[in-house]
Amino acid sequence: MPLGIFLLWPSLHLMYGLTEHRSSRIDSKRRYSGRIVLIISLLFMSQPFGLEKGIFYWLFALMAIALCFVQLRLWQPKVVKIITALSIIGFITAGSVHVFN
Image (tube, rainbow, N blue to C red; front, side, top):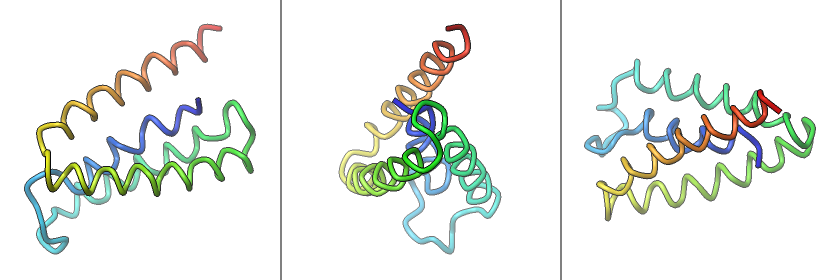
């Protein structure tokens, strides 16, 4: 699985958080940090499949993860923190497998 997919959920969590429900109230530093993590995830997408196929997977994964994030953020906000932690752990383990093999 591409490394960049593991960074999509944390970037959305960083951009939108759990308590803000209006985009005008979200701190601009959080928003820019989330965008930087999105760009980093896009850079990691070319690792196993190549750039064109990786960006294709990234776009579809972004749409699916964003849909799930919005629904869970509204109905089960406690689960969002757990999934964010699992996603970061997955990024670290998958990244270490790519680095050390």
